[in-house]
Amino acid sequence: MNLKKQIAVIVLALTATTSPVWSQDRQALPSPTAQTLQGTWRVTITARSTFPAIRTFNQGGTCTGYAVPPGIDPGQGTEYGVWQREPGSHNYSFRTVSYGYTAEGVFDGRAEVTDTLHLTSANSFESSSIIQIFDADGNLVFTACATSTATRFE
Image 1 (tube, rainbow, N blue to C red):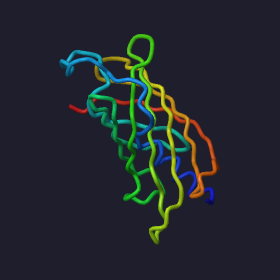
Image 2: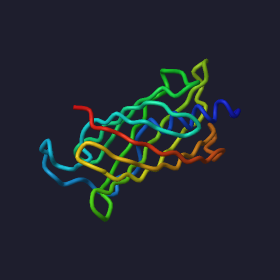
Image 3: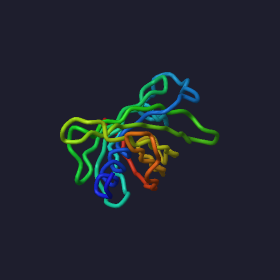
């Protein structure tokens, strides 16, 4: 995987959302003032460049995301994953996975993102990520870090 593709996959990985479920948020549906991760968020991700994304954290611990980072095919911006509560006030984590394909439709590899997140208010969060890029054979070829800020979409 060349560097341009690696960067593209990293950015793609930041926009996706999946991993093993560790636990579930057991709160009822949130009131407008409750601090919970459930809902849809407008996310700004900063890795090598800054770009917008969207993430949805579902009741029960699953999540999805989408973004089109610079240099990425718009059809490859989907992420799937899981989230869980972490110890402390308003702390969460999530993992996502996304897949990349060549222009010919051949599987090119995957990106996995592991993220820690803190709700800074009922309608905003900050997070930090570790992105791992794997080639089509499953070999780890690149690791990077990123940060994000987000506001709730209502």
